[in-house]
Amino acid sequence: MNVLTRKSYAVTSVAVLALFGLSACSSDDTADDSASVNATTEAPAMTDDPTTDAMTDDATEDATDGAMMDPAANLVGPGCAAYAEAVPDGAGSVTGMSTDPVAVAASNNPLLTTLTAAVSGELNPDVNLVDTLNGGDFTVFAPVDDAFAKIDPATIEGLKTDADTLTKILTYHVVPGQLTPDQIVGEHETVEGGMVNVTGSGDELMVNDANVICGGVVTANATVYLVDSVLMPTM
Image (cartoon, rainbow, N blue to C red):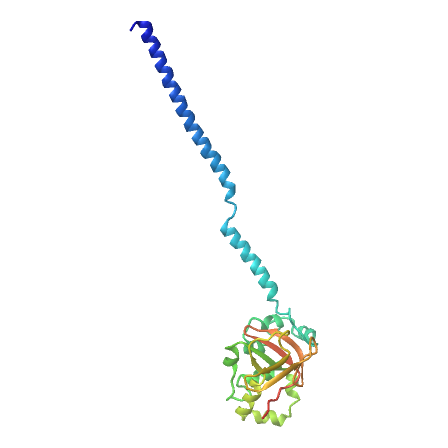
């Protein structure tokens, strides 16, 4: 092989090697560019953030629950406005009662002092229904103080020593389960065993012969209907 031929071969080899080198670099650059493009393209697909979605769902649920749990939302009765005016805030108000079990809620209500004394052992030390009332789901027909004032004082005096009769009267005011104003009309069996009959509608509900002053007052475990007379079971 002459000198010219060897020089040509050398040049050709260098050129081929350079070409392969450029192709390799080009392939690497293309791969890098493709990876970059793919990363950029895939990034927007990661828009569904589970944490964000969960927080959004929780906020929506909380807002819905808050709207549904307004203690004054389902009140019925001609005396609700007067009750709200007399007890606008604090533990005995409509909102305040909603956070406590029913016997505690009643004890904070200035309209229910006589009933509270009767169920707590204050009227008769042998009759204390606080734990019972606070321990289940109930509908309670709660006579206001003016309702007890209609009863002959001699009868009230007798209840201070007659535990059986007092218990019978008090449990006649309690129905198992929480009945909202749109469920309350009809006959219901009481804890005492007798039946009460709720009639009327809207602001004209009656329980037997007692008028509902303000009903649908919610507590932590009960729905309360303030009534203007003490209900008397069959003796």
